[in-house]
Image (cartoon, rainbow over all chains, first blue to last red; front, side, top):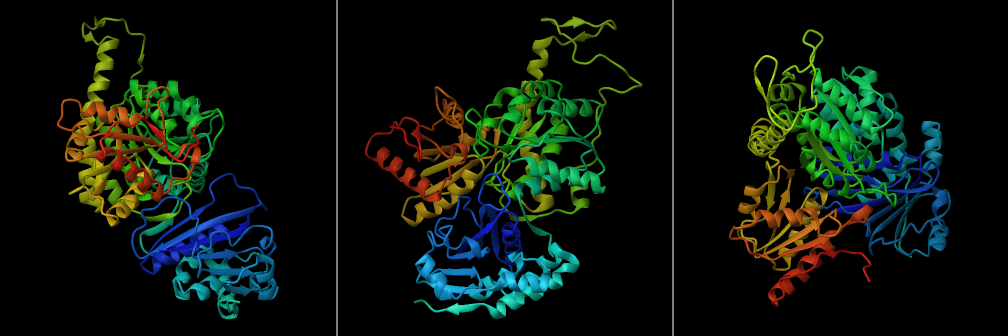
Length: 184
Length: 402
């Protein structure tokens, strides 16, 4: 089982990312869960959302404290929220940022596996809005190999209808463009 | 896309109500139920559910609308949580006393004061004696399946049914759910044929003041007194066990999913240690049992699905081989112990079950319950029982008590 924690801000669609990834897992014949951090919802406030993806039915209902993967949707959260909290040794951190990986490492004092991509830039070009939730799905798939790109086609079509094509283009750009920064 | 969708518990409940072709919905939004009320109002607005959505100013009125609509023969649905459910309390008795087949989802949440919007089961457990059938769900699939079954049960036994599921843990968590086809649901649950109680053609006075003793009507028919009416409700609740089991079995035949009737079991065949709970904690207990078995402890789970009517015969069978019984409960009957503990011990009276029962109160007001904590609690109980101290006072897991 792989456990993923998403960091975003209320209104940026972290829960939609979680939903799309869970649906894609089902498409691929796996089992999945997706849930927000429980509680009141506040637009703009730092929020978290979570995924579990497994080859077997998932019995566990409790929270995720030791994620295999952490995804940062909003660049401004780096240094503000302890995004690497509980990340497993050997785990993967995927960050939406325009800054060089070395700077992210320095701010977070993080030496593990790191992937960076300027997903906000891509989203602005492809979708016309600075909302990077679907774009970052591409980066997550590349960084983790948890699912194939094609698994996302049906969920995106179902959720976004005509806009799905643009979203697919954006996430493919993130898939191809995400940069690996080898462990320091 | 297949018929499996990734949906929250609230979405599953709303889709189930739509599949059941409910005709009247009256619900007042409250966290964590709000999404369910919102989705249903969208269904009605878009025309995908041909129902009347009655907006009300309180939960008391929501239940009153359901009672009224059910009395004239409509299939009705509502949902609430926590203090909303408590505000309904008087009308819950009225719905059951009127023998109306109302189905309501209770999205379990802790009760104020102090305020909590987070999950426990104090709300539904404290409605134990209202005359409602109470079903608890362990995952979102069971929410879908139990709502469909609930109408069939309610409309046979003429008693209202609460379908309870944990707030946030299920209501806001997306999980895969098989969405059954509309035709399959319709063949399992035909349109509601009310024994029409009230209509303009046949006006009558219903639920009048009853005198203590039976008496002759103007037509010379001997009519029940209040006590006979109470006995009939009790009898209906006792008899509903058969209907619940039969409905669950026929649902399994038609839909390919068996919810277990009154209770379900997991790895109990050779289990000496039985963990038991209701709702999502029971699912977590399955994960705990996998860990316990990996550590060499022969454990299993009995998940209590129906709390009222209480599955007396079923628990006597399910726990008969247990050497230790460990309960995890998300509610407390102040001044005594967890509600399930009292009920189970009473059900064991004059059976051959003499195993120690250890009762753990867990997860009140949304405190997360992890499988590992259940494992540690179970191990400490097993250790205590093996070392000759079977008795244990109700303990509060992961709570500062000193």
